[in-house]
Length: 160
Image (cartoon, rainbow, N blue to C red; front, side):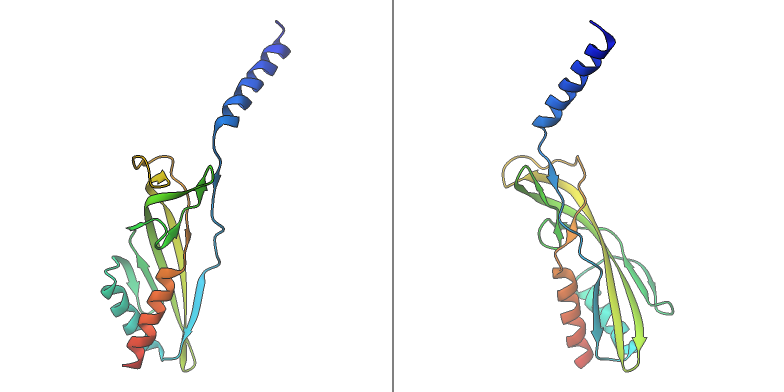
């Protein structure tokens, strides 16, 4: 056999194995979540810190002067705060590691807040059957629930 034939055979075998693999379909990452809170900066900041404490979100950094709050990674069920996509047409289930960074900025009598999220699988399985596996690690996108719940809490707390 010539070297060209061996290379062709090797490429064919590699394609056969790749053809058996099921593709991971990642969810589309939404843009950062933004909202305007109709309250002054100080009241909004205090409400954000209280709301995060009520939801038991572990904080890594909090800097009021620069308007940044960063959470540590924490575990959440997949599809609660994190959409981790599908493998072979079956939705991933299990646990995701999520973290959030909030940017708070005064804008007149209101306050603008932006939330950036970072998410990935920690332990997952295809569908509801099988054992949770830590690998491979898949990227996830936010479902928007954490952000919506947080802003609802902040709006409620700023009215008090």
